[in-house]
Length: 219
Ligand SMILES: Nc1ncnc2c1ncn2[C@@H]1O[C@H](COP(=O)(O)OP(=O)(O)OP(=O)(O)O)[C@@H](O)[C@H]1O
Ligand SMILES: [Mg+2]
Image 1 (cartoon, rainbow, N blue to C red):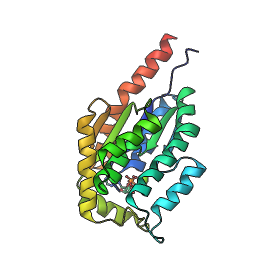
Image 2 (cartoon, helix red, strand yellow):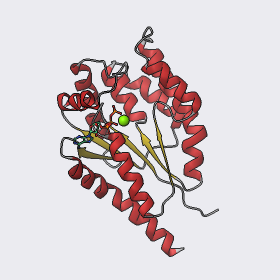
Image 3 (cartoon, helix red, strand yellow):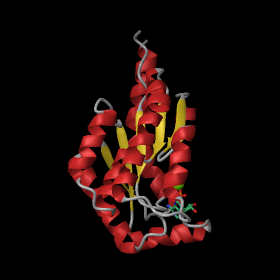
Image 4 (cartoon, rainbow, N blue to C red):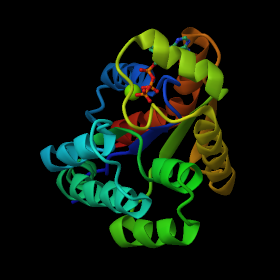
């Protein structure tokens, strides 16, 4: 089988930075290039992992311990990888994922203070063989992002109810991750207007699309 593997693209960043909005822009670009894709998210992405998501985001029950939260994130992720992400990539379908393991480093690591050693152990256990091909980190000041969440008008989930210092630690941890993995990460200035953000996202996506088109035309 010489079929080309799909590309794995993740979008990361705090609450309200524009991940979901830009995923829709990315899938439109892929459609224009006739590249097959699946859009998915974490926590979640399978019926089982969505049930875990509901447990994790619920704000009306007692909160899990920090270690329980971390383990549940990776438990859902293992299901998601087995049933959705790996099978799609093997079939040549691109996977566009709204948050992945970098979010665990940012939220459970930076936000909750779980150790990097624990995180690295779980990452190795669950997907030692697989990393995203491209991670777009949508970065902006936490106060402005929080206003966007408010303007969206939905009720805040358990994470969205955290205080600004929590989101600042999340932002710092994301930026540290980007610094540690410069080949995979691309930093997007999410504070700009949507057109300018899309332009940046499009520029970072273009090399991958061009490569796929070149491979296709050479077959
Ligand atoms: N560049 C932008 N400028 C202004 N508003 C924006 C921009 N990008 C997105 N928005 C708006 O901000 C709000 C949050 O965007 P979106 O839902 O895409 O963020 P998100 O990162 O997916 O949030 P969450 O983490 O809560 O899922 C939406 O109302 C969206 O229309
Ligand atoms: Mg979203």
